[in-house]
Length: 114
Image (cartoon, rainbow, N blue to C red; front, top):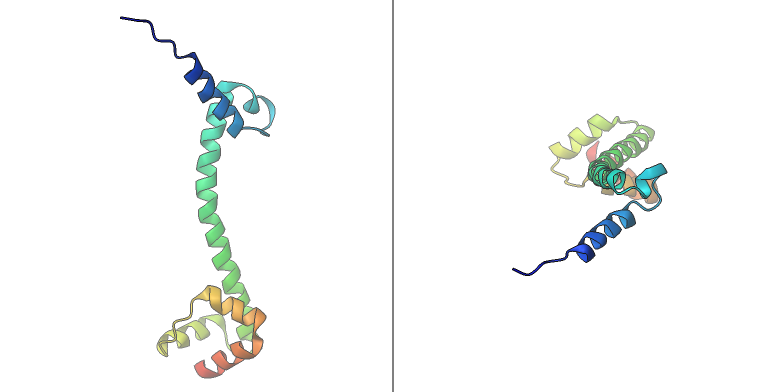
C-alpha cells in the first residue's frame, strides 16, 4: 500500500483556525492549541449574543412605547391590553418606530385604544 502524506491538509486546517483567531489577545492568536479552543468559544458566544441582542432590542421597544404612552396619559400595560382587546395586531417593533418617527399617528392609535 502506498504512503499517504497529509501535510497540506494539516497546514490548511491550522491556517484557517489562526485566520479565525486573528486579533485575539496573547497566545490565543498564534498558538494552535489555544487558538482552537478560543475559536470554538468565540462561536458559542457569538451564537448566544445574537439571542441577547434580540432580547435587548425588545426591551428597548418596550421602554420607547411606555414613554410615548405615558405622555398620552396611559400606561404601557394598559395600552397593550387594550390593543389586544380591540384586536389591533401591531408588533412592538413597529409601535416603537411609529412612536418615535410619527408621533401624530401614534396619538391616533392611542385614541383608538382609549
